[in-house]
Image 1 (cartoon, rainbow, N blue to C red):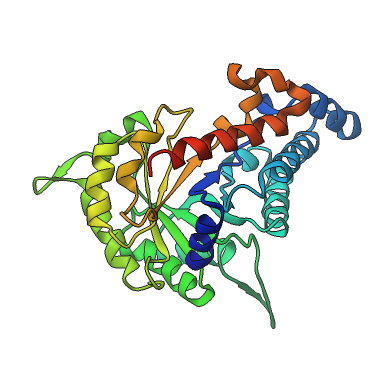
Image 2: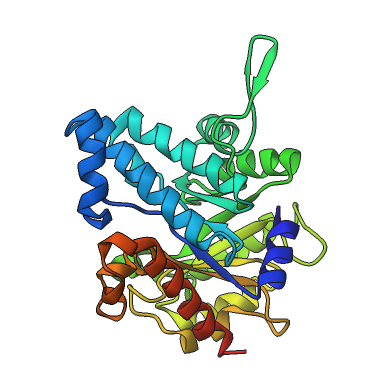
Length: 305
């Protein structure tokens, strides 16, 4: 999958992934009313509204970007009905030619990680049959359990030719409480970055590894250090736009070939119509506002090369 991701990034000149992280507060009232009229103010009604919101946004932006990143928690909060819409969204994005990074942040002891990996990236056996459940192309993974927790994911990725993005330095303000702690004189995120690079050597593509990293755009100096530590690692960069990072802060995450990183924007795209800049579109044209926000993001990011 890393080859397909890089190929699409080159073709579209778009090192961008859109986070499909819907909340009911993002969804125009007209969509909610239609869903609630059919299913009531229920979990099913909420899930249906999310589906319609996602569908229109995907239709509006699918020709501009290589990938999307649905955050599973935004769906799980609505229970089984929400998880069904998560799966429906993944499948629809594939139909539209998009790669899917499942933002699931899984990670546990070996056997549990193996189950997570099978469910999201691999196959699960049922009697004599084998099924692929969620069918994402990549998944985000928490490395806190060390190699025991990561190895099952890598094994499945090698079988399926799929990939991971492992949390190294996250974009949230309190990430430093643990990630910046010094161990033998170096911050923890550097040690994690070295392990990600080592794990990645076991599942290499032609130029970059299938095993990527998550490094927040809000810490460009740390990003510069981690880029050197992980030269063959693709970096998923959250924190652009709504979380405060600008395009000029993204340069350290890329290699000299202009590759090596893919930048995420979530609510800055899917809730663009709520921003003053795109207010002219109005709630009725929210998907058009999202498309314009993607175009503006692409122009901004392309300006650093």
